[in-house]
Image (cartoon, rainbow, N blue to C red; front, side, top):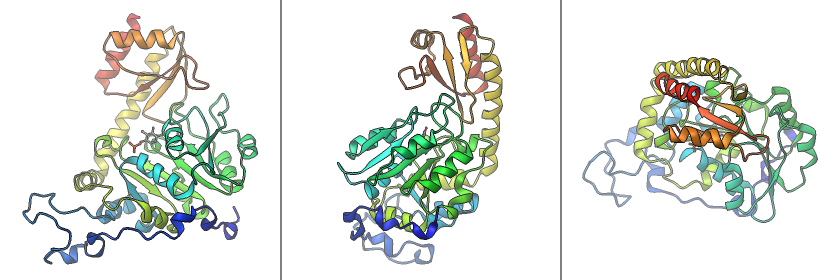
Length: 350
Ligand SMILES: *Cc1c(COP(=O)(O)O)cnc(C)c1O
């Protein structure tokens, strides 16, 4: 993309441009140098219990650690209550209800479509190819002046594969709106994150999460990386205390144990390989799709029947048969060795 041509102000909603954000008490004095000050500004209960104070609205400690891990400056990061909140903030900052539209590439993560509906934004769906790659020419044909965002989920849920680098590059260069690359599963992939190329593309937004590889789905922490301009717009509209104190503490704790996280990721990847070779021996499994995620998509003879049979044996997987290009497909999350063995034994008995 010709970066001199890109102007974020042409994409942001009018009401957001002039918005004066809520100024919270803790915005002004929250760093460690203020620790021995007396805080009588936020109507908190003064009796210490660990969480009687409002949390840091900028989550500086979490961002510092993420910044070192991911090699991205804190000013290029915004955090949310799960990536779902991040995605919603992006809609609300850039998409004018009943006027603007977005493009998504089914089969993909269901939240893009849900959020489009909530925000009254038209969702133009351009199916992936049968190998689950973006149809670049067709996507670009569907762009109009009101197309604000293109959502790329790579590696993609539920197919499991990563999108071709050249195709994503072309889309980033040719599409003049924002390209959101959802990298929820990037830590399970051997492909590089698009984070390395953030500075090259002013229209690029990358979302990641602590819900999958980092094992913290319960704390709800989503991460968004983008240009400083985009980040400051999102910061302006986010609820001031959107990431609570307990979440910030647990995130700092976990992010400081990079070694432990890598070992778990490695184990999940080993289990993935082991499970796939076992699945290959099951006669009614017709296809096992390549995966860069902590799940695998398979095609079976009758997805709904097999799904029900597994439920009867107390095993819950995801039936994706109603999704486009996913007829008779089931999505299986990689569990522990024991859980995967339970699944395999159940499959053998069917
Ligand atoms: C699981 C998942 C997420 C995670 O969302 P959180 O709100 O951060 O838990 C995001 N995108 C995709 C594609 C996912 O599958």
